[in-house]
Length: 368
Length: 258
Ligand SMILES: Cc1ncc(C[n+]2csc(CCOP(=O)(O)OP(=O)(O)O)c2C)c(N)n1
Ligand code: SF4
Ligand SMILES: [Mg+2]
Image: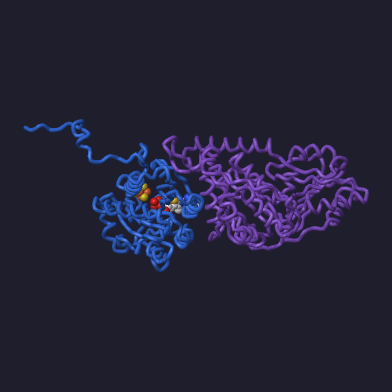
């Protein structure tokens, strides 16, 4: 029989990481994601699977605890919301430089500063373009449902270890807090220490006579070697761009106009597509699931088919830059966003699409 | 005239009373001649070898002059961000409670940027061992003022001496953490004379062997010289350390198991 439950997004990902065989969670409370730590604590993970859960003294400590565990080959994670993720950036950059696998979760709230606890998508740049120092990227997964919050726990760890990279689940306050039904799957066993030595031979597990010592460092003071390290990182990111793009096409086959949106905004646009179709507008939605790697090729293909694209984000226009790069001027691309924790309504975004591309037929280049 | 032994004769096996531990690599140390870091490395590695812990040891060294410790210590090591070694070590130890986990940190690292992590790792009573090399200065970045810099001491960022009115007082972080119930063994040593080296080694032995007891954090401070940063010869710096550092940072055990 299927195991189906009604859960909050934050609870779903917490249950997801337990079942994905996570070894350790280190985190610090912040709204709207504290349920992750609370759920893990309440679920006695130590007794259930042996998973360690620790409330750290700060997000800085959390991310460096993750660093230590990851560098020793364990499946580890942290979660936070925007201000806390800002604090973690140095640690994330160190993990990028040492190619350590881990799972990170940002349940985004509105900024800048302390901002608001309401949902937002204004951390796209920080997440996708690399919020810490140096040339690096993370794999970024954008869930649009509670089910995906759950699913991306396991997928996230798989991708993290497949590519030795940090995987960020970029959610938002709405997806984290809303309740939906979730189908749960079987418990994945945690790796034994013997399995870790085979799966991650680079990990610092104690130097045994059969191998050289393992060193985890992002330092190389020789610029020639440091450039090679960077070139190899870029090759990895390119490989990920070529092989790991994920997206969902909703009513795209005959679409003349296109919404591009991820996460909560995609849910709103999905409804707007239905409304549009009722009004006789052939509108579709492309929902990027991976924000890095971005579905650039798919958007370039759709640019040859549609007459205009509206990128809908709860931000002042961040992802729209990547949409425009993909479309490369072939069709007009406009942005619509609400700020400060406000979510747009489906008819609101549909009206904007109509106003931009249908009612005023002549195209004026965007000015923002 | 009696026979003067050649170098080869002196090196005969029956004459060998000491050799370098195999847990130090062949890489030439990057420390300034006369600096205490090298001796501290050697003692820690000797004890790990003598206790047969190489396969169980994971070390963490953050930034500071000892950032390249992994080049010299023949064990698995992680390089950590400035100040964050206690958090990194916590992550390792919680997931590998049976391994021997230590950090090796400078005073800028442990008592300035990483103060929060230092206090909390001690307060949680993490079963790790902290080696703290206090030279009263930021050696690596060129001799700037540290939280441990003595009053009136001249550094690159206190060129007229540390003015406690505007720059605060030297932080006795070791006394501070000894007050926390999470610490089990806390000692302050130096490595500038053979007698002090022997005492320091005893403290290091305790701090390593006590980790197995799971009774809390073990902490060994080594008050050390930074002849380059202090702008002295190694001999002058050791003398200055005895006369100025030791009165403020007195040597000896600060907290011992009951
Ligand atoms: C976030 C960050 N800030 C500043 C630095 C520069 N930095 C490197 S080492 C160091 C001070 C090290 O002093 P200490 O910990 O006393 O070690 P020592 O070199 O004296 O042994 C500083 C400020 C850095 N690497 N990272
Ligand atoms: S700068 Fe100071 S602490 Fe660093 S190696 Fe030289 S003497 Fe030692
Ligand atoms: Mg120092």
